[in-house]
Length: 129
Image 1 (cartoon, rainbow, N blue to C red):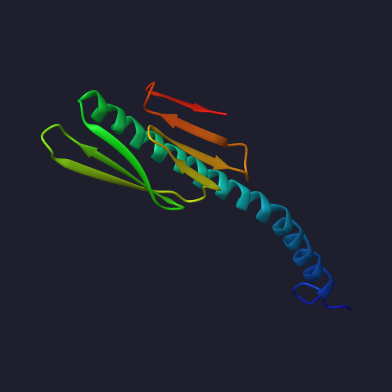
Image 2: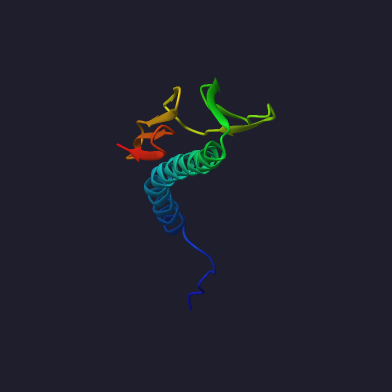
């Protein structure tokens, strides 16, 4: 009479490891692209929020200026007619290019479909190309 041993054979273990490796190869690139898209979307949401705040300050007759402190940091200064001032710093994750002009901001993302995002205080509008 044959007795059956409990456990898995070496071949069964190799097949399971191979299947796990194949799934990992498929899943990891998809996850990393999703992570980059999420960080870019967070950047755009942060800029939109800061831009809405800048528009509100401008409607209340504050002088609003934008400046770039680094490739990934934007500084927005609000100065009232009385001379009081406030600042807001926005740190970005993944912009390929950040351009700050007199009246607005332009962000460029080459990695995903976000493309170029532009905001302008002159016409109080924001647009994406």
